Amino acid sequence: MELYDLIVIIHIFVGFLLVYFAAKAFKKTKYLPMLYLTFGFLALTIGDTIIGDLLNSENPSSQEIVEELVEISGFVLVIIAVIKS
View 1: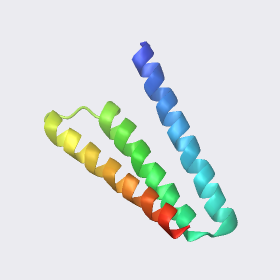
View 2 (view 1 turned 135 degrees about the horizontal axis):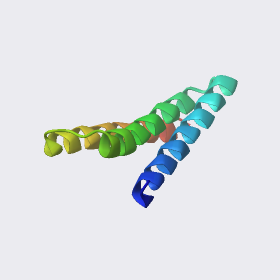
View 3 (view 1 turned 120 degrees about the vertical axis):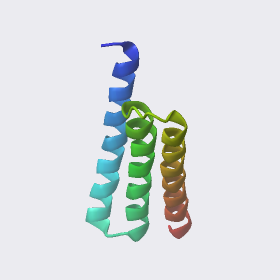
View 4 (view 1 turned 30 degrees about the horizontal axis):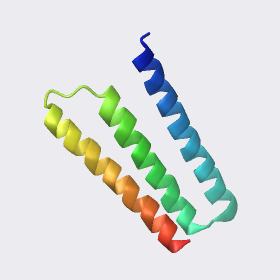
């Protein structure tokens, strides 16, 4: 296992840990902005690690476009959560 692979695994773990704690907080409080935050963190984690690092596409430019769109949607959800809180 290369160092890069280890860093990607740690990135995924920390990202999903953040999603878990945000989802747990929403379940406890039922506070709607926390739900937006949860899905925003999820989109950022999926966009950056799973789409960006783990999927091998035949067309790298389309993969990068999808990755960036998922990340942008994650940032938008985080912004909505901050505005609504």
